[in-house]
Length: 175
Picture 1 (tube, rainbow, N blue to C red):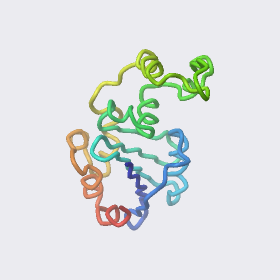
Picture 2 (cartoon, rainbow, N blue to C red):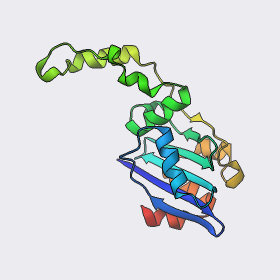
Picture 3 (tube, one colour):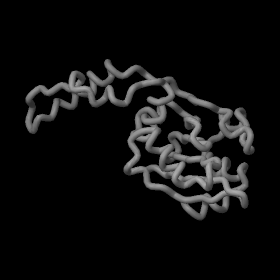
């Protein structure tokens, strides 16, 4: 189960909203969604978590490229939204997954490949992602969360980040 929230910085502090990621397939889609929530071209922070397995922070400042941090790259790489982030951080091309040359159409019932063979092939083709943090751990330093603090967050990390930003009540309201 995922939870995602947008925190948009304004002149008066932060505004929070929960967000559906159903239409988000790439980091560019996520950045566009965040820019739509921005007040003028101010900072937007997207917080994503999958239960207690991993959390991600994406920071968008105006038209600058998004800055991304993932708490546990190996766990995130095994989930849909997390793999979107880790693939971006590792420089993997998302279009590679759609390449017809990579598909194994073995003629099994309904055109579905044998799941055992499919998982073996995927394990061989997909390089392992190391456990631990990945990305820009300094992305929130100037707004209250230092690199060391971000790297050591556990449990309800999103609440701790929101608390450091001074908007924990807003985050809890959208949960």
